[in-house]
Length: 75
Image (tube, rainbow, N blue to C red; front, side, top):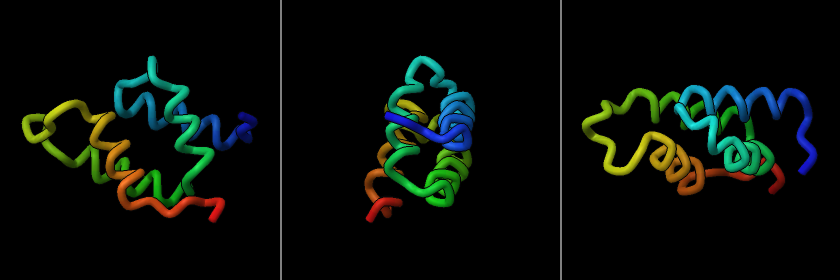
């Protein structure tokens, strides 16, 4: 997968914000598939949810939001 430097920076930023640097490859895949606007929107929504309302993990919630309602940037 060839990401632009901007896409790589976004993947790292999202992984860091979610405390998932060990799952960076998954975030790279999402960055390649979805628009930056969509990803940032879902990140903001994810970070606004109180920890006690999250069933699995913040990263799982984020991925669910992105994939569940996403508009692929390559469509």
